[in-house]
Length: 420
Ligand SMILES: [Zn+2]
Image: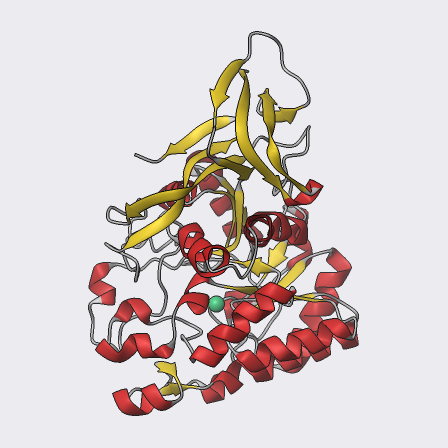
């Protein structure tokens, strides 16, 4: 397999504390310490070279919902955003809650995926929150993580048992934190804007209650819990306090919860309707604060494609969720790095190294011997996000001007994306 050397890039690798102009060498699809004289030379002057991005929360919609996205189109969009490893959520049709569906999805992944896809499995059968899925069998087939994402197990005893079994089998538990009795008629964050717009409220308390419960259970069962798409300021405070106490908890935030507030819904634009909902300025600021001080360790897109037909329905009938792969890096760079809140290496840690560490996958690093999954980033780039690679275009950034982008993506030493 071909050898090459990428020269003159600013190389950032949080796993080795590297941030300097240097060369990176690749042979046989892996990073290596030396190459022969015949190696091709790629000049990457003015670019940043970093490990391929890792997204631990994505919806690829296959099987069953391929009008929205497929594993092929979703992973092509991932590559265009710089993601080389993604963890797919199990809320497909049927859900991935059994060895049979896991095998089926694994076959589709092997045949059609454009980046590395780690398929997570449901915690409970049918994601109904009633009976545990066959976690031991799923683990044996290669499942790393479990979640009922899109739903949340309401019964505390079932969640406790899930955590005990997951610990026994070495499965990573992720939770979508939502107390259902408080969100029954919820369309958006419950507050001033929901009152003004006459839309059903979805209070932060619905998240805070489950975040607290899960942290208490992590303490009680002596296991780890990962909290998905955190959106509320109080949740950030609760997680910070739990970490201080030594409880094993990690959390993620999405680009959209960092970028927008509930005011964005004032024109009833369904591209701002997501779950959990956009919250207040104070919540978005608290999330950024959590990212800065390490309370929030991961940025994940929650890439959630829906068809235009679905997103054009009356607001209360339109589904929750937006796409995220192709805009995540630019958006986070703008809010966090250009604003001076965090450094580039820290952003790479949040979007690559840390999620890879949490999922224990061979990614998020440029260490010799590991797969040559990397990106070239142009911090000065300006572009309009106009022709989505994703099958869906439910993005609040569609046709908007963005800055700083991934211009090339490499998977196992092969270039799989180049910006026009
Ligand atoms: Zn979710």
